[in-house]
Length: 335
Image 1 (cartoon, rainbow, N blue to C red):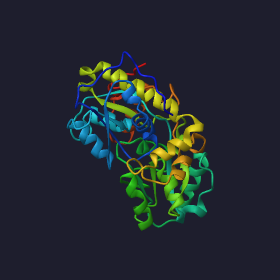
Image 2: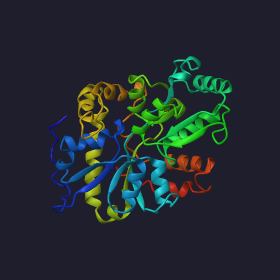
Image 3: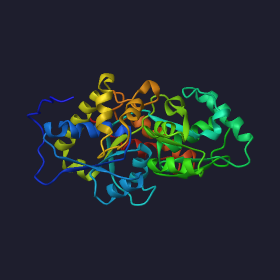
Image 4: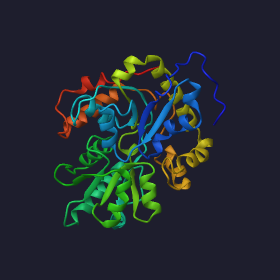
C-alpha cells in the first residue's frame, strides 16, 4: 500500500500545527488510519494527528471547543452540531464522505429461534422481529451509538416500515459501541445497532448474532463523513484540498479486496481498534454487510443525504421540521 508520490503543489503545515482528526474504534475509520500509517498525509505536505475517542459525544464536544479540527463523523451528528440541536452550536463543513453502509442490527441469542438467518432481507427480519415481540412480556431494549446517528434513524425507519412504532413499542438507549457487548452479556439490552466490527465481535464472542445489515434497510446509505470546522476550512483552503486528496487516495486503497488482509492487520493494532484481525477483515467485505469505501460514490458529500437525514430527524422528533435545506448547505463537496 506504500509508494505514494509526493505532490509538488501541496500545502505545507506550519511547524507544530497538526490537523487534529477525531475517530472511534470502527472499521470505517480505515481511510483516515491508512492515510496516516502509509504517509499519504505527509506526501500531500500536511501534518495530521489522529485522536481515538471513546464516544461520539466526545468527538462532538471536542469539535465544538476547537480541540479537533476535523473528525470521522456521523452525518446526523454533524448536522445536529452545526444547527445547534445538541449542546454547543459548531459551524461545520462536510467536504466529503468516507464510507457507505457497514452497520448491523445485532440481537441477543434469546431471539435466535424466532429470527431466520437472512441478514440481507429487511422485510423477512422485520416481519419475524415483530412476531417475536408479540410473545414477550416487555418491550425490547435496543442500543444505538448516539441519538443523532445513522444507526438510530435507520433502525427507526426499519421498525416503522414493519408496523413497529419506535416511540412506543421499543425502548431506545444510547451506548458507545465498545460498551454494547457488556450490556448484551448482562442482559440489559436485547440488541444494538452499531458499525463494523462490533456485530462480528458479538457473534464471535457468543453474545449475539447479526440479524440484519443496514444496507438491507437503505442500500448504499451514507455512513461516515469528514466533518471539519468551518473556520479552519476558511483559513486553510490549500490544506483542506491536501487533506481531501490524501483521504480520496486512502479510500481507493481501502476499497481494494486484495488489500483487506493488510488493512485488517493495521486496524487491529493496539493504537487503533485493538481487536482480532480476522474479525476486522471479515467486517471489511461489503458483500457481507461491511462498509463501502470506493470513490467517488463513497467519498462524495451528497446534499441529498443531508436532506434525508434532516427529514428523518424531524420525523422522530429529534429536530424541528423544515431544516432539510439548512442541512444540505453544510455539504460542500470537493472534487
